[in-house]
Image 1 (spheres, rainbow, N blue to C red):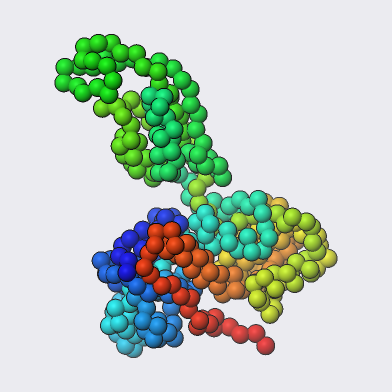
Image 2: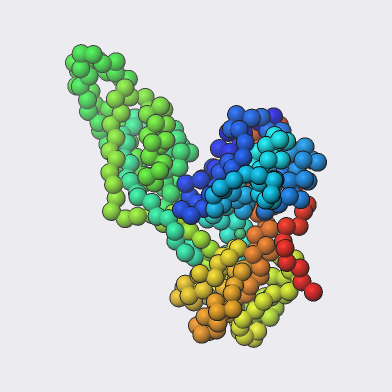
Length: 371
Ligand SMILES: [Zn+2]
């Protein structure tokens, strides 16, 4: 058994709720944060069949990618599928949690996994959505504590620059202090001017991590009064965004790459706009419905853009731009969410010895079939 609130915190480490798009609705949708969870089911969508499957499998928590409650609700009654799902979920003590655009954008989230599966490496964010204010933290530490302090700062999320983590700069020097009447100094005596060999550690911190980083730093720092500087940097840090753009190891023609995509994502048919003989190396992608980024993919020099849910006129835009475009399907580019959530929770379960069982829904929620 594991507390729902704690389980949610575990999931939010990968995909914080605050990273979701403003129009999105993520987090706990049905349930009680204090409940105890034994059995978890992961699914792309929640429909009545999925809920039935969850009831039969004695599930306590359903984790879906697409939010059950999205546009708000005016009523909850049995005349609508949504109403029936909510009522039945409550009756059967099943909590429902969704992790949507926050999971699309997460580092190691859905788009990163899709890129990895399609052999696209050296990826960057395709459409930057969130930047964060950046701060510089400089702290003065006795030499023997410097490694421990650095470890703590990095553990709490300081030191990220682009794809690099644990970045810092240290320099040794001499610190001085004169302990006052009411002090209890770590070293030296009241009223005596002390000289101590110290290290100045500098690192960067995202605005949303500052509180946790400072709190943890003060806890491990040996000084009664810790000397540190925190100042705002003028540059923003690229933080989260939709889609990815990267490179295939070797050039491959579009026709051959289409075969590979079908194989990897288990797709019978792909909708393609483009020239099958074109050599492809730089590839942009966005899981789900990403037609908004057609022009951006072209502007960023992609040889090919892969997404789902492309409308007729959006495909015409790709044609005008002479951009190769694949509509691989909304469902087909996002069904890997089940693997992602399953693997992540399984790892957390093994690492922290959580007494929970995780299963993947077996219901095919794609309304489309191909003939
Ligand atoms: Zn979607």
